[in-house]
Length: 387
Image 1 (cartoon, rainbow, N blue to C red):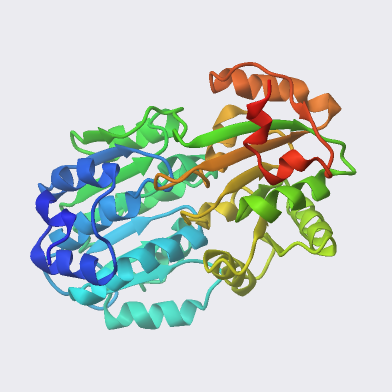
Image 2: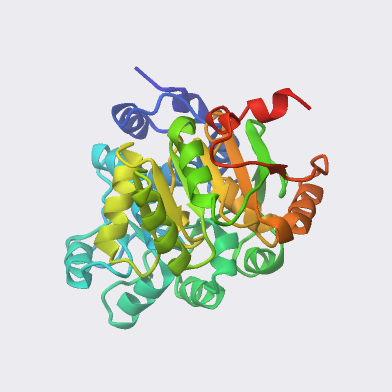
């Protein structure tokens, strides 16, 4: 049976792969982007994490690859900012590719380099790569981009935020054959706009939201807490809310908060760049399978969290700018589900909350004072019922 993707012009073989992988129909960004990308035009997409970008560029990439890849010379390249995202993208596209003869390989640092080289040598049509590992392989002559037909740059704004733009440009200069470029980003300004201007040809823009839009089903809650009570408040929220991601500013804070939550009996784990790659993958996998209730993460590590069922995002301290708040909060309220963005503010952080509220065009309100034994924490909607 054809899926809803068939109506977008997706070739039957790929549509069968989508059906076999459990995809029934397209999300909004896929409906907008796929028909345009299938024509071969460059595509510039503005969409948040969790909106379905992976299939929006992955399906056209598979459709446009027209022959098996030679050893170490892929035909499709997906650039991503983090190793977790490389794994996520390859896990989404891999099963579809297996069905239609397109091998998808994730290439990233922190994993066995020799194994990746061996897999490249066997031939992989699509490589999903982080910039630094890819450059390392290219300089060693173990990955050649001269046969690339399609390039996708995912989360370009995060690539810029994390300082990878020089490496991305270096890679793009080595894609020498005629090719299609697709770029997806939450925002299309600053360095991302420069990248579009330099490396894309008359791109067609597709967009499902404005740059500062939040998901309609996301609710924002600002709570005034005492610093000694924060961990108990988090534990109380997560107990009934469901899977929760807590954002901390430093790796050390992640470890301390995760340890404190574990002592309170919460099913929690840290997720940050100083952890071994195997431990990070294990934590993400357990969280994805709902075996872990709380992930305590840094911004960079959390880029790999691409899970629809996150019920709440908790900001351990208020972020200093709206953009960070939106990137973090974008982990919840995905795929049409409701979600909570909860900010914990100590007595001297209320002004930062007002700045965030103003940037989001929310009603300006003082954070609501709570203690960990507050019954409202078991049902966050109750904070809105009585004014």
